[in-house]
Length: 258
Image (cartoon, rainbow, N blue to C red; front, side, top):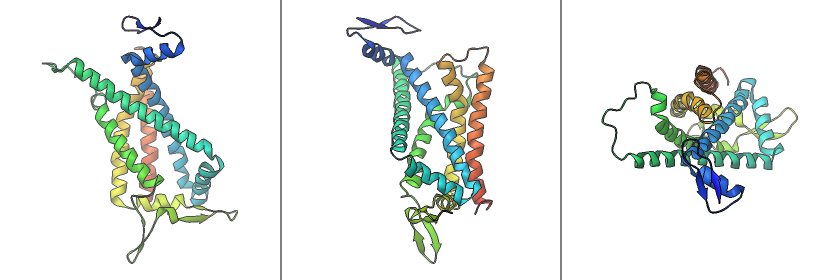
């Protein structure tokens, strides 16, 4: 019989033995699931930072961005699909475990508090579930828009249009590649698409400004003494992602990149 230690309660015993039983028992507990939410959340934040940095190549012109996109799609090859599978797995775990914890919390107290004392709780902390669900829905839209290219087409005028998939660009070395640069321009010159992205980025900022600090506390990386530093890191990271992503939308809307 093996035991998984719950820091906030009694040992959780299982009939099986070995590391698999311990992992199953530990991450089956609410504490273990909160740790999984924290780990997957921080992993997704790392991806967001890297994704933003890559997209900022739009300011270097079509040659830079299209060469970078070609490198990701063709030179890395199978590794890109492995990374995508890992990201989707983290995203799925993060969302489903969060929903499960929320359901368990609601089931544990079917009748709400008579006097809810939430003055110290920030708006971000109280809306984490809702901002997370909206971000999840936007992620599906984003994949349909720029990955599967089924949401929007390039307006060529005179009633003519062209699929994102048919956009091509010739690099300096003569290689013909997919024109991701023009795809970005076509997307963000469309007002309703730009509006959706702006709203999504603002909600992402709200979500991350609390989520990053919360994840660090859950993992025991910061205590009360370093709580202000954790909040500063959370706001700084969330703000950097917000500014970087909105800068791309604004640059296209105002014609700073063409």
